[in-house]
Amino acid sequence: MGSPLETKELMVELQSKGIKITQGTGKGRQGGAGPANGKGLVFGKNQITVPTTGECAINSHYTLHEDGEHSLIFKDGELVSEVELIGTPRFYALHTADGVPYNKIALLHGRDCLASTVIQTCSRWHGGERCQFCGIGTSLSDNKTMPVKTPKQLAEVAEVAVCLDGVTHVTLTAGTTANPLYGIKHLGDCAQAIKEATGLPVHVQFEPVNDLSTYSHLKDCGVDTVGMHLESFDQKVRERITPGKAKLPVSEYFEGFAKAVEVFGRNQVSTYIIIGLGESLADTLAGCIRCIKMGVYPFVVPLRPVKETTFANMSPPEPKTMIELYTEVARALADNGLRAAASKAGCVRCGACSVLPAFER
Ligand code: SF4
Image (cartoon, rainbow, N blue to C red):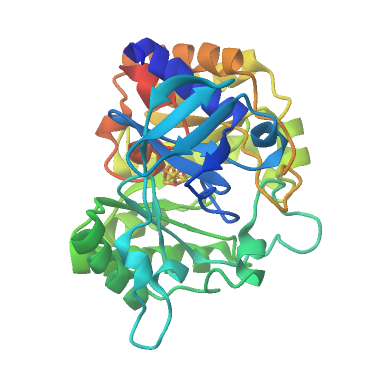
């Protein structure tokens, strides 16, 4: 059961190839944002979410078997690793005084990150501009969540999740609002309420804005880290995959990154970069290095098949591609003094959607 290098490679394989669930364990969270349609697995210090649906998982050589005592991963019937599963958090069993289940307000991501989509609607959902990988409206119509979570509800859930499940940081995101500043304001209000109730470090995600005071306002609300997600450095890929967001040129993201670093500091600003959308690897690496030099952590992740989206049966990139990219990006991170472990909150600190943090070590 493997040296650390083998474990790292196994994690990459699993995120690219998916895993079949054989016995004793569910498929993990279905639908929604972030690590949807995946199962949380822990390998020592590293945690990852692995696709459990879509053609990649159905045809995977890997299977997960749980017998009540052990969780085991097999490849073509041969045992390759024991693994720890991330179980259902205890706070999911509770609800607010007015009867809203806590897991319609926030979810556990990875082992210890409380995550919520505080506005579950997006002005781009109808009308052909939605992001191709996104299931924000699907979770809402499936009645798995609330359209808007209030600061008070989030503070209540966060307090309980700290006590019952040892949550240590928070990720807040939102669909795009017709006036983007409204969404950002609501994110700030939610962050402030959570911070006042728990003191937890909070990460928020939004699209870049021109005005430095917006970033300063979020900082004043108690936000510790921010993410502005480009998804790809390739404008043609952006126009195909994220047609609405692509109207904001890549240059505006970089302007936003600079402003955010000025306010939150190096290593506390990130962008999500999805691999497997037809982008050039050389251009992706160049884009990542440009981010890293300015203090922005490029959180590189493989495409994930998400049910009921156009990505449902798409295949994640080959492990070889991910290993190559992780190795180069990790080297650039080290050369420029950035580390996932130094991020105070959010996806970079959580790390479950990418094996990049494991390549840093
Ligand atoms: S990396 Fe981000 S989206 Fe993925 S599980 Fe962690 S907090 Fe959620």
